Image (tube, rainbow, N blue to C red; front, top):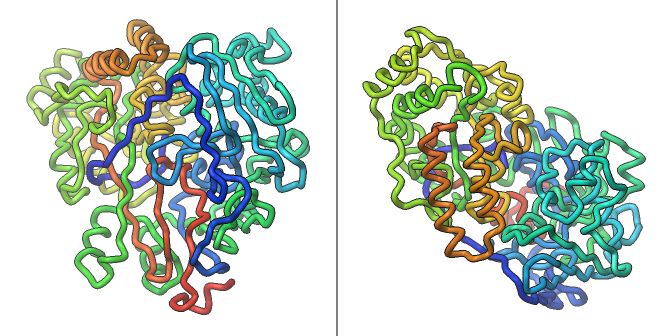
Length: 549
């Protein structure tokens, strides 16, 4: 998933899950995946958690969510069939338990009863059929329709040739059966994505495209107010089916300048803030070092090169840019050396990463030779897009200097993260500084969405990269259930993609934040939509009285 995140940080701890056939029954009474008894908890109830967003969200409509900021916020409002658990390692039931056929093509989900949308209506299997078909419907034009494209009959429905998806079947009020066209190893994992959240048909039809700003779900919080470019307020859902949130509400203020929100944190006006590498080092050297926390992320930061537009439609030019950028120096300057250079798109600790990859070294002479061979004249202009972040601007200015040293003139274009990569799609820019964060912990998620030609644009393939051989190989790997075979296929795919250089592969990261001493059990999740903020609480003995609640 394309991400609006900070950058430059260290290698992550990782996780890889293979989801095969079998029968899984994992509801445990007294837990967030359970049914009846709320467990004993020791936090203070009440108070409003005050956080910060470095840009305005685009939408909270699951059908249109493409970045992790929107996905993180949507996780507060909605639920799906499955989710990633608090240990960050495994899928667990969210609204349903499940069974899988031995051949991996039939999934049967048993929904928990009594779960209600915040409009008071109970959720049934029909709601999931509606929600999934809505994402696939041609009228919706969802950029995440690929999440469901493996379901039997999905292609025909998406093309408008059938009135329903044949592979989605309601067995009874609380039982949903999904049949795939063929085995797909990562299908269950994809059902944890925002696109698979359940929504009420009557509210979607009432609000239309405004549903993204007036969301109705089943989650622990309700969106109570959203002022564009200013803030979003969430209120605890009193009818939430699982563990009651400690917090009375959550407020996210939109602040672009890291210095501004750092000052607010120092004044005690925010419960937690993100840290870039420089800020992290400053906090670690001061008296608040014990308040800094690091989160392992599954991510790759990169420059997407517009493969459909000169000069980057020539592989030699794309390779030249990879050689021209001094990635070790950039990581040392902007990441305090606290990161892992990327040899390719797959994070090094994800199973399927090709350990034999060496990537591109810094070699400006080779870059100039490749540019000359491709007929690129000195002074050729390149338009490079980035978000409005001031810390990212410092980075892209350093990239600009490296490219200008080999004869490319760079103009930096700044825009909203909600518009990430649009310039690549409409050919108004030549390159963009972006990042891809895992929707699920599988190497396939760093290949199919971002390099398959079926996913041009907002679906994930921002660079417009296309290679029929790569498309075919990705398709084969996606239907291979043997883990050992898939890992070999992933390694070969990554090698081919790195050779063709649709990206400048920069680094893999982790994110850091600093939290106030009264903010307890704040544990950001490795998967962007994994934390529903139900365990976070504000210590009444330490919390300033102005915090409310």
